[in-house]
Image 1 (tube, rainbow, N blue to C red):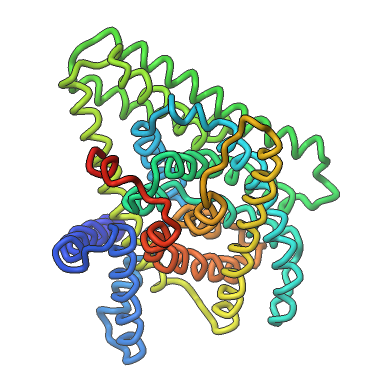
Image 2 (cartoon, rainbow, N blue to C red):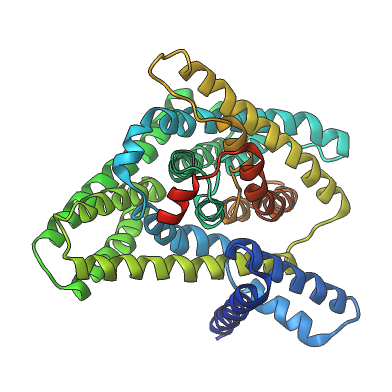
Length: 424
């Protein structure tokens, strides 16, 4: 019953905060909802210092929600599919080289840069941490969060091609980051000497290639089923079954569920928009259903992220480490984006986006995925430290970077032309 009460409270707060944000704050939903949740939490913490009983009870209710399991096993598959199904796969295919390079090369490169830098910096703060766990932090903080990116960046009026590049990268590097995290977690669990390069590569290939293959199979199979009927209730149900069943199957097969849902969403979205799968009425219902799922789960996620501070332990040294990590993560992101793209520029057919490196760096937001991965660390890890650092980085990313993306777009002059903005 405590879990039901906690989820009921979360839903009521999400609805109330969404109304307040839409009516008064008028911020992008992710920023407004998380800010309100964070402000409420800080106010409650202040009251808790006075021993206010109901406040302590509220914190206990929030603690009944397993944030890591809720995000990784429930929300993530829905949010990735909902995001991918609305992405134009044909246009994304034209950007396959920069998107693929950023997802496959930038994420591991950033993981190494962040992990190495934190291994050097943390002892200076009196927080020495083994290299393996520093690399684990690099793996969980390096992927840009597609949920945060889709929620904030798509409302910043950025040029379409640049927006698609950032969104496309975030959809795929999310899966790559989770796979890297799984590999490094195995290394941390067994010890570096027990996990050979071949074993690590085998885990990576099973997760990544298996996820891509599973997503392709599920997407094509669902597209075939959708093509054979014309009933919007059943068609919506089929897409829902794809996400729920596909996520469960990916866990059973030890393949990447996030990658599978991204690929399946892209395929279903591509074939449905071509007019070969769904009638106009069915297309409208499917689009609105997944748009609603996306908005509701986003609201729940960002409110919960704001409330998480109630149950986190954030000593002063951890906060300082988090502030240092903000600079480390941004610098690593800059290098991990600039270096691969500079290699692509050697190809005379590659046309780099204007101010692309700056926008990819500042627009690469971190979100609930990073917090969920950190909370999923084993007890043997310096879990409290890494969760605290991750939370500080994520709060800055969503609120600090999120609020300044719009002004940065205008300052750099990379917004959509007025005519395109009106058309969109």
